[in-house]
Image 1 (cartoon, rainbow, N blue to C red):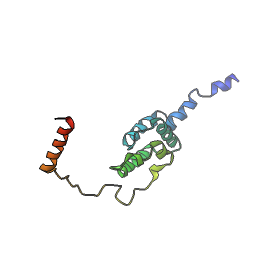
Image 2: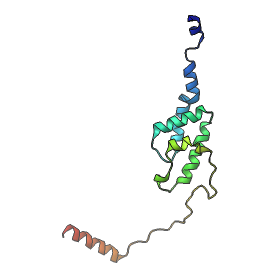
Image 3: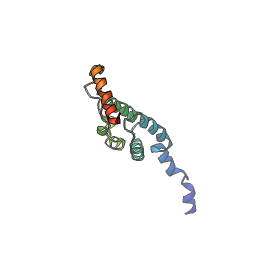
Image 4: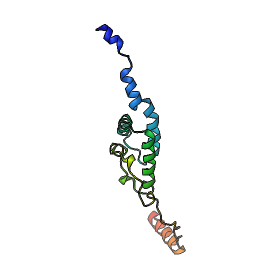
Length: 133
């Protein structure tokens, strides 16, 4: 029985964790996290990321998918951006880019109109009245 215990390598369980989602995945996770457009729920996202890498997914594919997703979410309300844990759990890095150019805002820039002298005077007068002068 003692011979069987000696025959098993002492780091066998740790070796699998490091390859599947340990130190190697930690650096890759940081790359992913920097690219993802919503920075909430880091612990759950880290677990899902490590699980995906342990399942055989290349971390670079996940990060590239996060970059595509960030491009589609640019200029849109954050409340409609998927939480990173959910995005990872659903395998969304496999999504194809959208046909509308990746969500880029195509509205031309229109500078705001400068306020007229009458509008400025009205605002100043309202401020003075509010202050009691």
